[in-house]
Amino acid sequence: MQFNKKIGRLLLQILAVFFTVLLLFAFSLAWYWKPTIAQAIRKNIELATNNLYSVEFKDLHINFLTGNFSVDSLRLKPNVLVYKKLNQTNQAPLYLFSIIIKKLEIKNTHPIQYYFNKKLYINKLNLEKPIITVYYNELRANRNKPTENKYQNPYELIKNTMISLNVKDIIFKNTTLCIQIDSATNKNRQFVFLSNFYVKNLMIDAASQTNHHPFYADDIGLSIRDFSFTNKDSSYNFKIEECTASSASKSFSVYNLAISPRFPEQNFCDKYGYQKTRYDFTFKSLILKNFDFEGFIYHQVFRSELLEINKMKSNINLNKKFKINPFRERKFPQQIPFDLTLPLTINKIKVMNSEINYSELLQQNDLRWNISFNKLEGEIDNFTNEKKEINQNKLLKIDFDFLLNNEAKTNLSLGLFYADHKRSFYCNGEMGAYNLAKLNAILKPLTKIEIANCKLKKLQIKLKGDEMGVNANISMKYKNLRVKVLAVDSRDNQLKHQKMYSFLANVMVLSNDNPSVYGKFVQPQFYLARKPQQGFFNLIWKSILKGCKESIGYSEKIELEMKQKSKNYKGLPRGSQ
Image 1 (cartoon, rainbow, N blue to C red):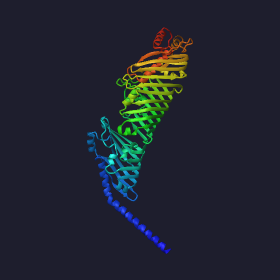
Image 2: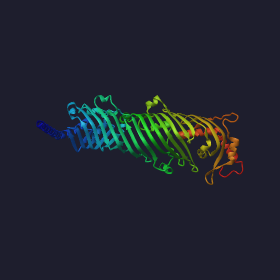
Image 3: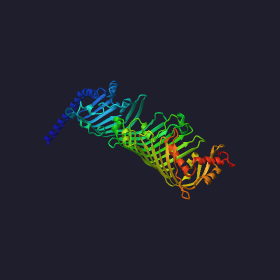
Image 4: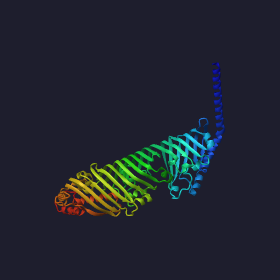
């Protein structure tokens, strides 16, 4: 028993001496290798990047026993002179980085494996409060020359110092991202705070050059919260509650986006001096699915299979008291994608549970009309500005179902043709049973007519046109039409009921039913020329309105004749002319 105790104490002493020697050896290694490793880090960064980047840090902490390393106050700086030389020969990368890190922690490495096999494995890489500045060379991107630099392939950066690099987890804590875009006119800076940014299983080796996950990792993800900015002309504020992205799921999501005008409706056009449509949008979510992250980062091409828009609410207003901008081009919807500078293709846009409210303030008498498209559901196919996509499919197709003014079931289908200098299109639509008296808020200011009674059975529209005008075919079935003709009373600028006009209209002019009691069905077919500076949707609306008026017998010619005959009647109230 006494012997066993002596053996136990001896073993404890041996272990204590062993661990002490091991610690002293590790400390000596760290003390001896620390300057060498520090110098090697600086040299390898410069070597791997052809002197494009250099690295500085305050202190280096090494623990050979645990394989843990840490670096204090690390800074990665780009060499501007080297970048300029590369830019002259079209070899400069599109992106340049500047990184400041308060503390970099590397956990559970295998330095012996790296020393003998040149394979570096890191279990976890923590970056505390990094400040990352990304410089995007817009002028370089716009040269339209093939990229011949080697910085898109990370293996080229490490192959002279190691065979492979594998990092299981990279975690960025409380990251500040600054994006600076250098263009021909200015330098635009935007700061973004990343609440979460991670990289899962980063693997860089010779094989990963041709067979790899996006960005050489199983997943790269980020989360941005409470982000806001103002557009270029300072007319709108953009606010995002949260934005997330994941390369593994190929998804990019935006939640609770609000686009708000910075000026009230009555003053919005003052800044421009012309008519300017005012928008106010909110989106519950915008989700891009099967998004091409690599194409966007490396080639500045925006491609996605699907964009889901959920619970969009928009309030759109046009103040017609201002004059039309004579220099503004009125674009058709198929021209909208070409306003974007980067190549863009979204195969399908799906709109769900949405609402659009539109109103106009008219030039005369401060009259306003409103219309709403509620419970909007639909799809937009082939939204693109890329030539190769247009060569395969020249049709931009839009299909929507909605409730007009939250009541009338309506379907609208638009087809707009790309690569057509005439901007050809078609528009087909159908509206179901509806009490047309509920449209008086629109009809009264626009047509000076108030519907006293009319039950619409079905309205069908078929339009085919281009930038010159529209061929229209309107089918409107209704019963028991009665109207009140209105006119602005000059004494108070209010719309007043004109009894004489109304009597003439209901008895002598208008068709009370279509088809009539005798079976006659009026189905207007006509051509409506597009006026200079007339917008696309205004052209559609005017075509439908003209067809409906002709369906009830209230054509422009009859309207003028009726007004002329009414002058022969006495006792016409003031303001009826």
